[in-house]
Structure formats: structure tokens, C-alpha cells
Length: 185
Length: 439
Image (cartoon, rainbow over all chains, first blue to last red; front, side, top):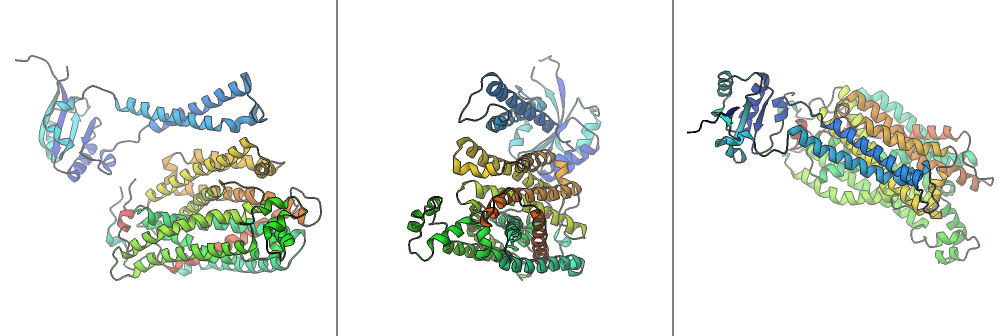
């Protein structure tokens, strides 16, 4: 007999199809939950609106990432090619008018730094990489890659309560409501 | 989210722009455009002297500005059909109407058919006519001419000869004019079709394929023949793409403005939403970057290679005050719009986009000015036997006058097209998909 103390992850509820899930998501949103998610076998258009997901702050990171790349490129090209060691090619001047020659570098580094910020910023915001997710403890959850739609409300949400959340999920049409426990430790 | 648009929201006979609502504007445009056009043609064909030469350049500048916008309309129409798009069905008729101005543009091109106008604009024609005359072998005649400059023209006679030039102009207007007419006809036929299936839609898609090729050839070589040929010794393989980038960007700006104004007048309410403006704004953003990319590629290779006959274009455009215009284009045609269009909420704001579209159109005026007008001083000076100069004083008055006339003539035909059919294809199978667009 196991005596391990398990942490409750939250409630998982199954839905039959995308339209049920969509309507249910709107109700969970209106109930004021923040830490919850929908799981679907395929992308459902407009679900982010139904869930009340706010716009990501990632674009701002990317803007400043790109700006950093741009400034890095100017500094790198200008200090090396004009300041430290001017390379005179085709009689081109080694001064501010050489900037045209640096445009490809500026362009590339802007793109590169933006790209890195997108990738690493995204990973940081969504909390990846991680080894496991508590929700995988649920047996029925496997069907999310096949034909079932799920809503999971996490226990760490301020509005979570053992009874009320369960009855809310039942009310909005969820089947097989399951209390998922984190068994990862 | 607004309510789902269903077929109940789409009027059975479609929305039609009432003649009465735009009658005043159309009359003013028609009057200014018509009288100005007639006066310009008479002056250009019969006039002489420095002001005449100067006005020939003004006229080319104004006509080419309008032509790029109209060609962009053809491009978006063909692209929309060809890519089987659903998002823009509710604004597709606007694209068709804009593109269908092209066949009417032939009237604006009439002055260029006369040697009296050509002599200022295209030095190669003058040289060709003077040297070749009646001789059978043009290349030999130019090659053995006493003026060594003509050797460069001799090797280009396969392309640069007046006969072929006239044939090309005819090809542009007949070819593309016919195809944009055809594609628009399919679209309009669907409005009144008893069985509005997919027949017309698929026909439009099928014929857009040839049309796209014709469009590409027309835009590229029209730009080459009318603008690049201002200095026949100069060549750039990027030039057609450069003109195309500005053309696609600015016709999208015109489409956004048309959409906004029509909605303000109470049309397109059910089918065009913020989402459409968002997509069109994104296309503007994309072509702002593309314009910068292409114009820089053109400059960069020429600047690096530093070959005499290639650098002339940029040398002239960076001499004295023209340098300010070249620099202004970098920051104001690319830098500012790039930063302004980054955010998605500004692309959805009709107030911001109205300002932006007028701004970008003004930038396009400067861009076309930068392509054409720097050639004026040296060319006209050379023809009218005095010292070639950089700038002819007072010539800007002619530029503004020609621009006003050409834009009025364009608006008159565009408004005529807008009233001649329903404002959006109300029986298109994808109209509801487009109306409920979400991106």
C-alpha cells in the first residue's frame, strides 16, 4: 500500500465535440478562472477568444531583441570596419557613408536576434522544456490525440474548490470528471 | 465577437453604390480630368520650348504614378483568384474595379506616341531616327556613326527600336486590358447568374493564371520602356521588381481607403470588418519591407560593383539636393511605415489606416518623382541647346498640375467602375466565409 502524499493537479472534464468545448470554455472564462486550459485533437478557431486568453507579451520581447541585434550589428561593423581596421575595397570610403555595406549584416543580425527571442522567449513563457506534465497521469486523457476534447481547471487557481469546480464542470456539460493527482514524484 | 453573418444579411440583388452620393465628386473629377487631359494632349502634341519639354516629364511622372496603382489592382485581382483565397471575397470587387481602370489608361498615354514628346523623354528614339533614317540595317548604321555614344545603342537595337516599341505598347494595353476585363466579367456575371454555382468562380481562377503572366510581363516592360529607357545606357534587372513593389503596396493603400470611405457612406457594413483591414494592413506592411528590400538590392549591387554605366542612375540621384530625396525615401518610405505598422491594433484602426494610406501614397509620389524627374534637367537641357542643368526652375508647377489631372482622370474612371456593378460579389460561394473572417 502506497503511503505517498500526492498533490492534486486539478479537475479534468471530457467533452464530446469542439462546439461543446467552445461553449463550455466561455462559461469557465465567465466564472473567472485563470489557471485552466483546453485540450483538443486539432486547432479550434476562435477558442482563444472563448477562453479569454490575453495577447501574449512576446512581441515586445521580440521588438527589443531585434533592436539589440540591429545595434549589435552597427556597433560590430562600424568599430571593426571603420574604427579599428578599415578595409578599403573598390575605393569605397571607410566612414559613415560605408553604412550601405553594413546593411546585410544589420538585416541578418536583426532577424537572428528576433528569431532567438521568439524561440527562447516562447519556451520561457510556456514553461518548456519539462520532463513530464501532471495531466498525463489521467488514463482517459490519452484520447485527446484522437477524438476527445478536454478542459482542465488547476487546483492552484484562486477560485478552485473541490465541490464547486466539480459541479461547474458537470453543469457545463463535462463527462467523466476526474480529479487528477500529480504522480510525478 | 459580432454575430455570425448569414445569407440573410446579404441583400439578394447586392449592394450598389448610389450614383447620387458621389455625383459631385465624379463630376469634379471628370471635369478637371477631362479638360486637363484634353488641354495637356493638345499642348504636348503642338507645343515647343523648355516649358514644353519640362511638361512632358511632368506628364510621364503623373501618368506613371497612376499606372502603378492601377497595375497593382490587376495584380491583387489575379492573385486573389489564383490563390483560391476566401478572406478577401468581400473586397475582391474593389480590386477588380481598380484593375479595370487599366484599359482606360490608354488615353493618358496618347501624348507619348508623338515624336515631339518622345524627343525630350527618350534620347534613344531621337538618335535612332537621326542616324538610321531609311537605312535597312539599323545596327550597322548606328555602329558606324560618327558619334561614339551610339555604339551602345547599336547593340540594343533588337529591343530599342521604334517599331517594336509601338508594338509593345499595343500589347500591354490590349493584352492586360483584355484579361482584366475578362476576369472582372466572370465575377460580375455571377451576380446575376440564376444558378450561382462555382462555374464563374473557377473560370476566373483559370484565366487568372495566364493573366498573371501577362501582368508580370506588362508591368516589368512598361516600367522598362517608359522609365528605365529615359537613360538607355542604364540598366538594372531589379527595376521591374522595384516598380512592382511600390505598385502592390500603393494599390493596397488605395483599396483600404476605398473600403473605409465606402463603409463611412454606409456600404459594405455586413461583409467587411476589422479583420479585413488587419489583413490588408499586414499586406501593406509586407510590401513596405519588400519595397525596401528590392530598392536596397538594386542600390547595393550597383554601388558595390561601381561600373560606370550602372552608377549613373544613382550618381544623378545623389547630386546636390536630389540626395535629400534619396535619403528621405529610405527613412520615410521604409523606416517610419515599418515601425508604424508593427502593431496589430493600429492596422485595425480605420482612423490610423486612413492617415497611413494617404501618407504612403504621398511617399509613392516621391518615389516615382525620384525615378523620373532627375532625368529632366539634363535631358531637356540637352535637347534645347543650352547647358544641361539639374533642375528647371518653376517646373514643379507642371508636376503638380499633371498629377492633379491624372489623379482626377483616374478617380473618374474608378468611380465609374464602382457604380457599374455591385460593390461586392454577393453570390460568390465564399462571401460568407469572407464576411465571417477571423485571423
